[in-house]
Image (cartoon, rainbow, N blue to C red; front, side):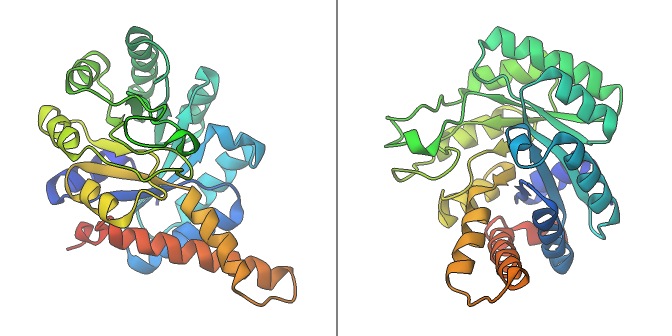
Length: 279
């Protein structure tokens, strides 16, 4: 069933756990994610990233997302991830996405506020929630150390001011993660996470979860993060599974990829302590 993340995040804040948000890029991946969630009887956030249009068109993403999310036996949030194009974000809202992200994190603070506020006003009138990013989560390929990367860490002061000015429903913060695969070892600023969590009531989101390490992610989930995005680790797991599996045809190859993704996602459900949702 398709739901809004708003009520789910209330539970994450109260019980201190996170919900995984895997990016789907085709029919195979979205079905695999839902099967894992149904097996565990836990909610899932099905994210489609604007940057993945080269793999899956937006029209296809809408049809696949709505079809499988509506059929799901568990709460499923249909979420637009890293939306940068206003027209695409508006269309996602109009076409049935229950959650959208406006990513203007590389703009000035003032422009980020302006763009986010515009989307918030449009979305809230239609019962859709909005995620935005303050600070900037860079790329793992540029991460050499916490002091030598292209990430811009979120400050407590800007986080407080941003949510007050935009009334955004969830906030992606930068505390040491990066998108993709790291060159260096990620160092998470847990002190900053706790300061932001204590300063605002808005649910917090972590981007760049892949390769961040189980201990780091478990602490993030139990110390203030409500949603953790995962993608690179899932497709890497699918690829690695095929390398260690004998297959004789396309179907056996595809099944190995599916099993790799499912094993990886189930692992992260455990790391994120999502089981607290039903405890």
